[in-house]
Image (cartoon, rainbow, N blue to C red; front, side, top):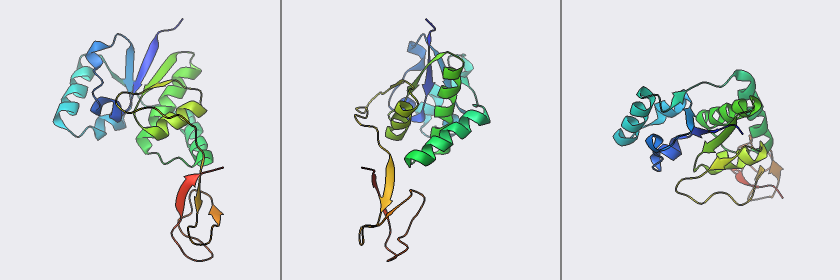
Amino acid sequence: MVDEAYILDTSALVAGFAPEFSGAEQLTVPEVVEEAQSLSVKLKLETAITLGQIEVRDPPKKTVDKVQEKVSETGDKVSKTDVKILALALQLSEEEKNPVIVSDDYAIQNLSRLFDLPYSRIAKPGITTVFKWEKECPACGRVYSTDAEKCEACGSKLVRKPRD
């Protein structure tokens, strides 16, 4: 059995994940370091990196592309950081390691399930259902892909909703 490797999202650190108390390998992506805003989170993260408790690693482009393809299919709203967190976990999984994404972000949890990647939450309850999304016109009911913004028929702003 391969030891777990925790892939840390910004939300995990903000919610209070303590790298110093985990014996597991811990990794994150450069964008998480950039996103750390509060002084306490920034200090905790920088200290853990300096002490070798957290490794900062960029996932390869091919796994980033796989995640972006899945995001296009599902319509989840994710940031570049979210994509890279998922791609890093996917890379480790492909290397037959045992990644666990640590995140309170529902879109990350949704995509984690679709990739069969385990995740752990910190402060919020986890997701209960996996969603794929679409956009719908609230005025006329037409349905569009998730990259559309306005209804072509009536010009109304589209709203995102789970696909049936």
